[in-house]
Image 1 (cartoon, rainbow, N blue to C red):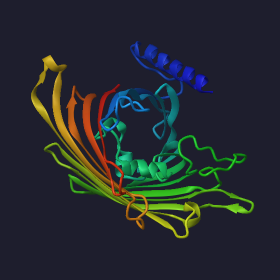
Image 2 (cartoon, one colour):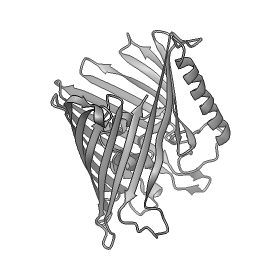
Image 3 (spheres, rainbow, N blue to C red):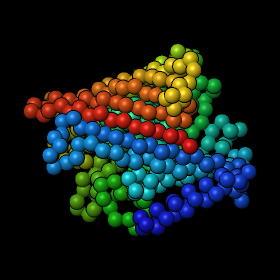
Length: 360
């Protein structure tokens, strides 16, 4: 199956390259057709790991190698497909159709795409201020409360400054098939996820938003039942200044039902992330340095408390580093990442993570 998907992806890529060599790109059933992609090479160095340890302490990986195509079939109907070939393992990321409604003030989406939860998660990987998303974003994704799911969504605008989205999905993550006949497991279980988001613009430079998600997880099989709801409420904000400063942050308050957590009581969690970035253009691009025309700096602070009733269950991550732009579509990011833990006897970890991104 993986070989078939890989061959299919390569075929799509070769077809795309062939079409790009022509004067005009055409698709048989579409009014317009657009091809895009992304290449990210990442290097990670773990300063805490010794060179003779059982695990490697540094090296390169292909973080993302993406191919995406978008088509407009009519003035109201469009579609998007995106593949990611990460570490030589192809995966389907986005596969969605969209129908515009109510004089194009709203749209119905269907397929696989991101649930409307957590501002940082909804920011494209091509525009992240730091190399990776925060541990808070990863916690929500690992808990099946954000990131990509298969389902439907109604999104739209309420006036000029407010937009909304309501999503109903399998809640089983990427490729989470949950139709009749699937074997039940933790996330494939007849349960569904309901998520929603509202975002409001406050003038020209600020936004506030709030997300909600509730997902039924666990298995209910005859007399064996450990199913329950995982839920989260997550307010967030964004500040976007003309001087090149961007600040985004979010809080998340969530809970696992006691049966799902296999605990005597419900388990609550709390997340916090604040990320700030600053960029400035150089007076002239540097020809000696590959055309660098903009530089910047980013800083992020994250706390993850997976169980608020336990004192030694919290981790804190501070990330920081410069960014160098080679035109609009190419950048080099270098981050120092310091992670510390509240549990006694657990050493802090410091990594240096670098990434080169080219958006095609």
